[in-house]
Length: 230
Image 1 (cartoon, rainbow, N blue to C red):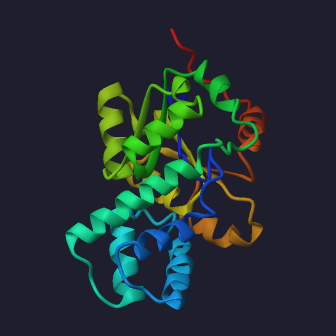
Image 2 (spheres, helix red, strand yellow):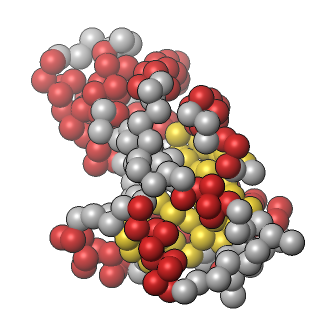
């Protein structure tokens, strides 16, 4: 069966944006809570460990507060931290740090019926950045949090009347493969760390590549034929 829809993750897949998020989250916490420099460092270190596990921004803030600070935060403080982080996140992508080979999106878009961008970051922010960086035009829909990826996948399959095997999702985290598997869609994992081979096997990624650039060559090697647009 041929793919009719292809989706991309955003952070770490199309945008080089994951590295500084821990520092951004620590700064956001410091604006609303009196926190020692040591604990701010711990927050920055804790954040990367939550990436790729399917947690929404609100869930990450809750987990960090409970595990690093040792106490829960009020709903108001959590909202304020999330909002502050969001502003820092959007600003950090103002210069559009795109990965090489992002032109692949346009090439694939001409060969399938549907293209979509799906992130766990706030939907309004993702749409704003995608528009600013001239990526929106390649995607039929741009989706994000707080709604989870599994729910978004299910809605798109229903909307486009597709069988899960007709959809492909490309992401850079193990969590991307986990959510794809939950819905039954095919997943491409971008991970250059060969030391993760055992974990990749356990996850059952349908395809593995070292970088976004390798996605195109992957299809060439497979001699895969897409379902052309009618």
